Image 1: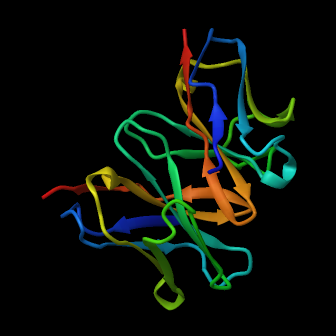
Image 2: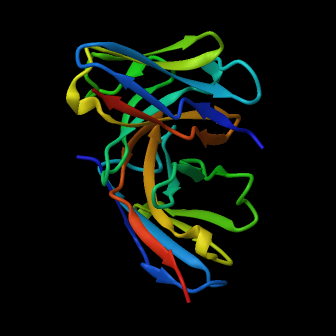
Length: 117
Length: 109
């Protein structure tokens, strides 16, 4: 059974750095072709792809957020970590992690992060 | 900046057929963009429907199909059910970077 779950703070202040962890089970990020990515969705708005890390540590970022994003993996702990610096109220969103094998298939339940002072 | 465009809203009658499209600001969408389609109902996590243009996930009902149509990626629902009312998103691959469309709100009426 494949599952992914996001964890991290629900509230951050403007200018702070957000750190989110995706803990997954049922697959390995050391398997060729596997990737885990992050997607976010502001309330009432569309999905936005943020970043993806592959089994070989190749990392890809949204061009519009690249300067603020970092994605890393800990294969032994089955975790992928996303950091987003200099948070702003417009970054308020539900943040999802998802697996990519061929297509993007399994998603976590998402975690709502609110940016407010 | 690359923009992926979907119809903002569509309406279909139960039992009918509807096609949603996904266009790229860079030009025609081809199989090399590996189009993915997702369904999201209010308050729920997105659910994957189709990947690499035409491939259904194991859980995707057969009434969903994917294709390329007129330079766009397309999602066709045949024999629409009331439970198909949802927001639908496409996702395109641009050489390592992925971009979502703005979504199509499908109403079954």
